[in-house]
Image 1 (cartoon, one colour):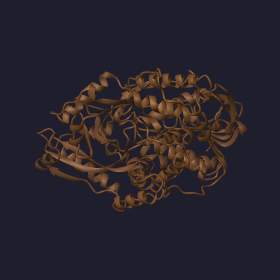
Image 2 (cartoon, helix red, strand yellow):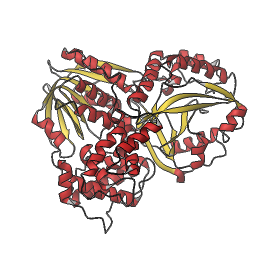
Image 3 (tube, one colour):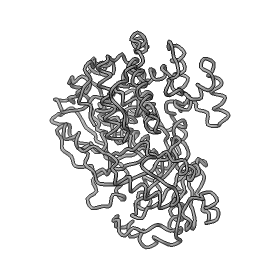
Length: 593
């Protein structure tokens, strides 16, 4: 989907204006997926004059299509990627400390149906990186792999070591598992419950360092212009040039496309499509027993089922893909997901009526020739190339990368950028908590005490909702709400209020209605985006941002088409006849706050 149908009353946004007022920087980063955002934050912390632009919303491309996992990558051991596993495990442990409001420990259980299966085929796959004949890994091989995995995970007891149990204890905990299961192996990884909000925290951390950090979403790079990059504001259609000493390409699967637009053709990328579905299925939710079920399907593909935000996430596929085509979860993939659920939970019914959300994205993997998709490296590298015909501007491009290692990757990319600028690092990010993770109490009693201390104006129940959504940034949101005239619970979504939607609209770079329903909130992800909810969110967002009726109609149409095409959610674009009145004066005040 695109935003080519520009709303009729679009005006230059403050974020864009700050770049127009000073169209130069030491560093221009193109692409605000998690790695571009992480690098933006890191460079901003070093005091670098840095601009970040993104053609869509923050973390709306490949970064929005992950399995919501922060994991060490136990299966990467079979690929021989020991450096990546070690870094991934370290970063998993670190992120549980730096972003504890969003990154939570996740017990992960592997059901095992044989003892020695895979002993021959796995080493051959390790050596050749060819898929070969699919064969489930047996207990001996999994035990060997998890023992090695534990050796990378020694970090002060951040997560427990793996454990094996036999059939009887397995069936006591997982009574819906296939009855021929012989063992289960359980180890710990982590899940990021709301990755888009974690990305927003990083953006806000960067901007808080000072005016040397500037950013704008819905601004795309369309070409080179001398020593600068020609940019286009997709909202207004306005083009302008930003010059920089270093241009950093972090556009993920579209890295080659971006380089081609800038005048330096590359052929580094070869991403694969991964799809997921989200199910409202209480029986399956309960069957997972509070953790992820992680296993190898009959075709050799590693897949997962786990409870997330009150629903069940099922994924993922690994298919060849074209970055120039929209990524959608197909009906064939849905059938595949249903089959894999049946593979381990044969008595649990799953059906299309239970799907509340579906999504797909292209992984930013390097080109891989005839290597099987599952064996393509998940590691990253940084390439330096000339920038167009410029003799002054330098360019770096990121190839690869994933959510788990974004902090370490950003540190590496920032260090390379600093070297090109002749600067050295002054701030370390290894122990620097992120956004609402700052001062986050990690015990239940500590969290209850934090809520009580900040509950004076709003009450404990409301403060608890905010704390769960924002971590310790809930205090900032509560302050906004306390001064927001007429704040009231939404009629269709009472755990949110008009003031909170206004906060997200005016303080969190919301440009389109789709930003609100897909990334500022998780309402769509959990299946809560009914027609009344959509109508009310649209009205309150429009009020907060001062949209005209024509702009609101455009935004509703764009959001409805996006939700239908990419996520399988059917809504009506036409506004209801008796839509709530919007308060223009309140919108102006909220925007100026």
